[in-house]
Image (cartoon, one colour):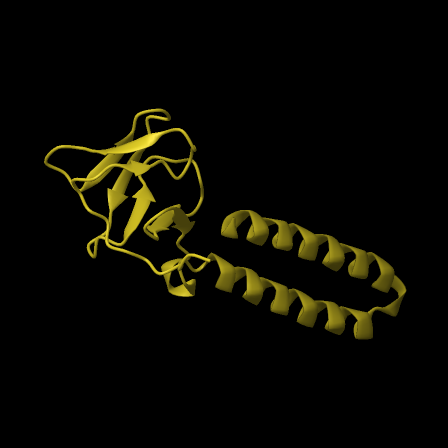
Length: 133
């Protein structure tokens, strides 16, 4: 099995496109960026020359890849890069605290509140899964 260790990206070399298998990333002259000859996407190289990020995208988070020497692997950012996962967790905790208080105070509408809490939890989970993709 080949190693998964990241290598520095050479700004004068060509690489396969991380989005499409047949595309080639070609260096853009006088910049620290690459352009794909197939999908027309532009990828910017970070300061350490180890990660490329897709420049123009409708994706809610940053799409980034690391070069292993023979293929691209997805680069994952920590919670410090974006506060969305933390906000979702706080939202779920507050929701369950409110739900437990409501169940004690109003037992007659507990089924409705439980169903609402489960529905909101599913929606939050869907947003979180879509974001981390």
